[in-house]
Amino acid sequence: MQASLKGQRKLPGKLPGSYTSGSKEEALCYADVLMAAWKVYPEAVAWLTRQSISALKAMDSLDGRRTRRNN
Image 1: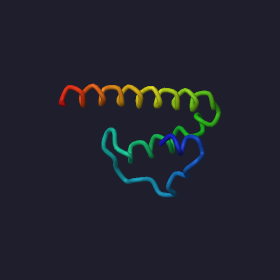
Image 2: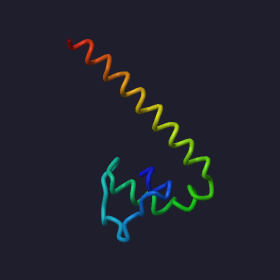
Image 3: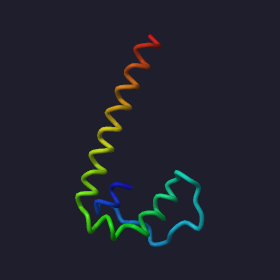
């Protein structure tokens, strides 16, 4: 989804007819409705990128701890 918000990937021309909570389809519907707001506030996209990087680092840290415990 970040790639779409950053303009690196286009949204599909046709949106899904339905979605489930947390699905890729839900994200597409969300982006279709709110893309204009993200474009007006580029600092929001930068914030989202920072949050994603922090979350990935945290998951990597947890994965490392799980691996050490299992060995």
